Length: 266
Ligand SMILES: [Zn+2]
Image (tube, rainbow, N blue to C red):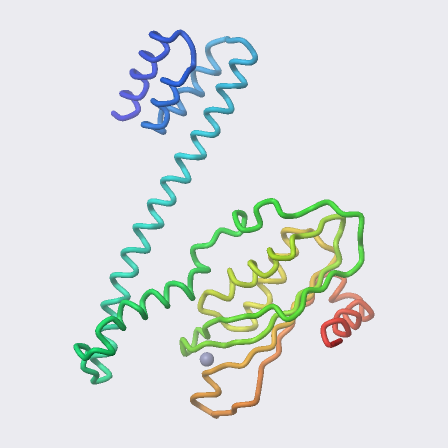
C-alpha cells in the first residue's frame, strides 16, 4: 500500500515538475520504498546522461540515509528495552542478596549497574566496517609494525567478572597499513563482550588479517583475571598470557622472535 502511494506521489511529482527535483527528493525522504520505484523509472525511461547520474547518486544517498535512520531507530529501541530489563534484573539481584533496595545508596544502583553493563558489553552492537571506515592505506612497506601496551578491559564469560590487561599487536603489511587508532578500536570491539581470553586473542588477529591482508599477524594478550584473584584460588599475582600467530608469524621462527623482542623491549 505504502509502495503504491509512494509510486503515485512520485508520478505526480514528475508530472508537475517534468524533472527530478527537490519535490522528488521530499517524496523519497518521506517514503524510502519510492527509491526502488525511482530505480525502475531510471532504467525504463531514457534520459540525458547527466540526469541519470544525478538520479543515481541521489537515489543511492537517500537509500543509504533511510537505512541508517532505520538501523539507528532499531538500535535505540533495543537499547531502551535492554536498559529497562537489565534494571529490573539488577533490582531482583539486590533483593535476592537480601539488600534493602529502598535505602539511599541503592536507590539508583539498578539503573546505574544496567547502564554500566550495557557500556562494557557494547562490542555486540559495533559494526567493524563502520569502525575501520576505510582507514586502510596503500603503503610501499613490508617492515613489521608493532603496537604494544593497548589497554584491555573485558568480562570473563564464566563468572561475569573483569579481566584486565594489555594487548600487543604486530603485523607485516602487504602494501596496506591500517590506522593506528583502528587497531585499538578493534581490540575494544571484541573486548567489550563476554569473553574468554583465548578467543579474544584470535578474533583480534583474524580481524586485522582480514582488513589488511597482511603477510602475517601476531597478537599477545597478558591479563589478570578477577575471577582468580577475588575467588577460587585467590592468586593475586598470576596473569594469563595468550598468543595467536597467523601467516609469517606462525611459519617463520625469526619473524616471531622479532615480534617478541619488540614487544618485550622497553
Ligand atoms: Zn572467570
